[in-house]
Length: 263
Length: 266
Image (cartoon, rainbow over all chains, first blue to last red; front, side):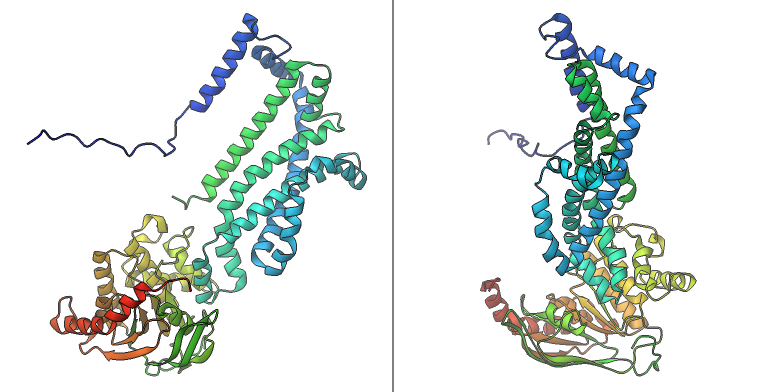
């Protein structure tokens, strides 16, 4: 009889596992590489700014208080435009999910609006809503509206039909079924759609500010760019990235609180 | 029906009156004529795809029959909130509500959110032995517990008729055995009218007072068999029940084989 061998393991992989700190490590390594390159000279100072200089610029922005003069108007625009676009988007998306007539009427329209680069419509918005804040709010609202609609009605469509059937079988009112079964069931899909919507909102915010604003992160980046001031340009970009990470983290927090029932 | 108080000795009878149903032209049920007297459990068995679940949806008004009608006669019991109440195969619990939240869901629309609702919830949880799990979420419960929550929810509306759609089919054999005892216990303590759809003949001979056998698609009523013994006296492995189960299988065997060979999507 031959000797018994251990059965080799072949079931590993293909499963994402949380690795703490890996993301941070990638950032740190890239920044250190850039710092080293710019100091050693194999990255020219017109190619990339020195990370430590960018950091100094950020500190200066903070200390001089100019950070807030740019950040506050930007955040206001994002908040006002985003809240308008997202709330109307959720309302329309739920309506599409619930009513066949609304679906038949609006889905083609949304499909037609979705791929339009909203920035291309900015001149139109300026005429409709004025050169001031109005056109910026409108641009961000419009830009966050379409992805929110699409993700919301997808989320409503994905609500477990057997739960709705159960509600009907117990004689729940239409309104109760929507409020207690459809909306909570659609919440996970709506929240994950918000991540995309808010990221698009930030992109459009900067675009709007580049096309005519005195203050705002976009205006700050545009000024720096036209002077070829790479440190300030990158400082602005870092602020935008931080904004993206922050909003994504906030949604993650909301998911954790609101969707505790998920395993 | 709702809110009507009728004397306890005259609960609701159901009559299926020549029911025919088609899905896009294909007949799935043909001319079903059936009496479901009050206080007794009728099991419906048949090969897969014979339309037994469709029949149950027709009985409870979740679908409309193409021909014929389901009629209910007599008054619903006192305090009945939903005369025809389902228990589903996949439990149909809201995953974002706790055990008590899932039960209060069906009471809230009747203005029973407060103290009165509390009493009902406490009562049905005690009857299904779930009192210790009020605050648990469905994902924390085993399959058998989930189905007991669904049964508790059905009891909470004090139904005239319970419509059970393969309630044990998603559970493993041991849990199924335990839940059958639970159902028998519930019925002996307070008899209810039940329509119990299953493909499992052992469940049918344990829980049915009568067993209706459907043919394969289009489902026709082949036979209605009386099960002799009282519900609480039936045991697994009882020779008389085994013989009955054998007879049922004899009735269905060829049809089940033929049904198995059929294309599903016609």
